[in-house]
Length: 66
Image 1 (cartoon, rainbow, N blue to C red):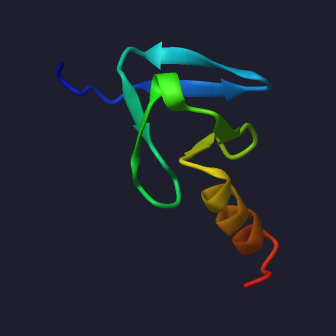
Image 2: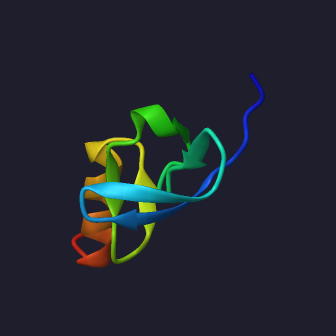
């Protein structure tokens, strides 16, 4: 199976596929996230996150807690 990066539009509780693919990159760690495993994203920033750890890193950075 070839890996093709998808382009998504993140919405509340779901995402819309703009360009077909099977993965996106985490905005924080740059890890590949298969679309079937994608659970965390930010609608306002239009970013995907690999896990709650990356969500927390981004939140803390935005709130300047680190």
